[in-house]
Amino acid sequence: MFSDEGVGAHLSRLLKRKYRFSSLEHTIDILDGGTLAQLLTPVIAQYDYCIIFDCLNADNAEVGDVFFFDYEDMPRGVNWQGSAHEAETLQTLAMMDLLGDRPPVKIIGAIPARVEGTTLKLTETMRKSAIVMERAAIKHLTELGFQIEAIEPDLTIQRVADEFGQN
Image 1 (cartoon, rainbow, N blue to C red):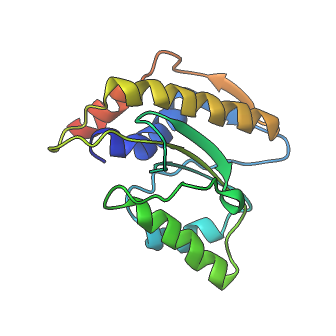
Image 2 (image 1 turned 135 degrees about the vertical axis):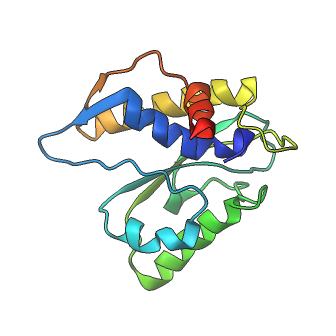
């Protein structure tokens, strides 16, 4: 949850507050899975489709680079080996594959800066990356048939992170 590594959790809370999603053919749930990883297996398994927001690591990538890909077609060099929780996401999805209960999964992730300490402040680079991640999610959900209305258009990821820290 701290600094840039909290981008996935903070982005999920941002989308939930900032937008209203509607569709005649689909429903949507936005969940903050935090660092629960394998404990999310039964939750993820109940869905027909899943989008995961996370930080990740990749060869030859720079801090702030954003990736959007199908889990089944993961780009070479993406290895999720960079923080205490990233590998758990990959392990969870691999375990679900073994059990045969993983829905189609899209990943929207960014390369975090490594920030020492326990701050909820995202770096400027990650705040910019979060905007790219948000736009990618909105575009993809629109392509899936969702109508999307901004109900709190000025909400920022840093404000969401700051408010999370106050609770």
